[in-house]
Image 1: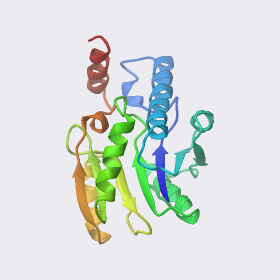
Image 2: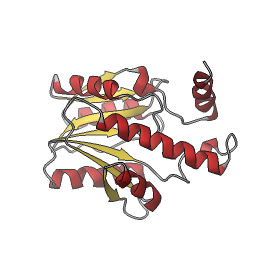
Image 3: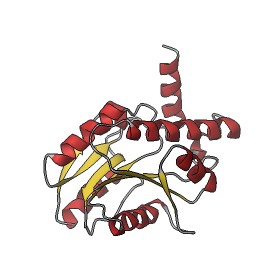
Length: 200
């Protein structure tokens, strides 16, 4: 059984680095739209995803996810992104998941086709698939088989850290590059680049 896990800090709290570029109301609306976009792309994929789980400490984000048809899991208090993802992966494993795809919640260009392509790569071999961000140093999606001792390493330089972690866990690694998965909205420059595409 293949599960998708989408982590999000919260609709109001996510993307704090954009606070000097857009106001709080605009940031909340952007986070709302991006989560909906990601969940719609997951729902429309043709690669056989069985369940979608959104994990967050934010009640507002979980309520939105439920309205979009996703299952939800409250992130334990006081843990960060990586521990929260580990908890979500454990939860999925207890419910029969044999494979998980972690997908960032801030991918404005994501499509169902891009998700299908990522999963096609994952199904082609017994390996961990890491989807690189546009800098080539970060991770925007990751697919791995269960059970595993793999621990998540999201944060600065996560692509290399995830490759090293996969090797430590005894798995081969494939780095997947797709523009629809690579471009996130982490910085004012990312936001400006995306806004420019809206006016073309």
